[in-house]
Image 1 (cartoon, rainbow, N blue to C red):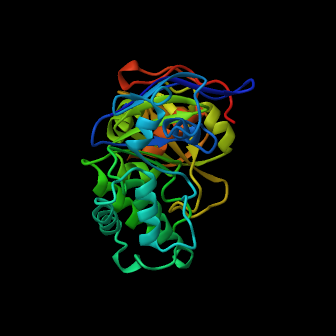
Image 2 (tube, one colour; image 1 turned 45 degrees about the vertical axis):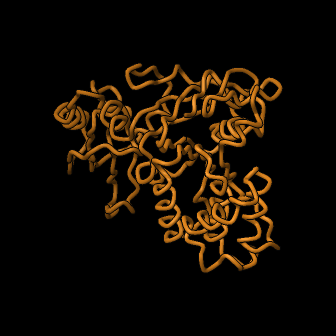
Image 3 (cartoon, rainbow, N blue to C red; image 1 turned 120 degrees about the horizontal axis):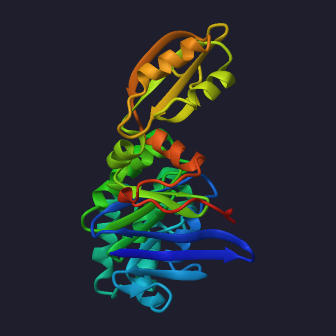
Length: 334
């Protein structure tokens, strides 16, 4: 449904995205995950026809985004990070207006508008002025305007940003309910957003896609599916240097004492992620003790999507092509 091949966007001499390639199958929800400034919004603006690409191709529903821009726009629903709303219109009036400019015939508009209102749980707000709505309801109206013409593809840029926890859950459930009948791509830098909403994830860093797969496969193939939490006594920076030399160790990070640990003098808490197929727990313990560190606790923990994200966005290395990883990162985003 959505095919992106070697997409690049350069501002002057600065690459915003470089050689971005991924695809989204019909009915699938793909999460475009990356840190702020990674190139997510640039990619989505190109897909929506808002920006031209410098190089590469993108097709939605079989139509080239550049060569058949109008046909693509008729087949997508787009929600930018700030919903494009007219605050002095009612919810129903605004959706009728959007349906009209998106080419929905006059006879079909009432049914399309009602369907969008019902899907977004806006029945009791249909005659309310938009500026009087809470941010959560405005976000729902933004999604409603994206689906009012019943497009096969929906593009959502940071759909839950700025919402409170309850609103986030409601919007997530709404997005998940659209899967199957719509193909959805959403961007986010919020890790739970991906694991709770998306069937597949593309991780983008410094303008390049560095991994695409299901969250479960990424956790298994990139981190080995497990790691270790350590409580040590000694200088943490030196301990990290020692642990980096242990075979089978992929990533080392400090754990804040607020994460279920009580701070004790001269104690440090570390999380060590193992490479795929490796179990370096015994070597970790032996190395630390021989180096003179006090090892108070070492326990195995399951790897998380956060571990994958940190590994892919902090390391410069090549990964197994079987998980659809791109080459080394380079360049900065605009």
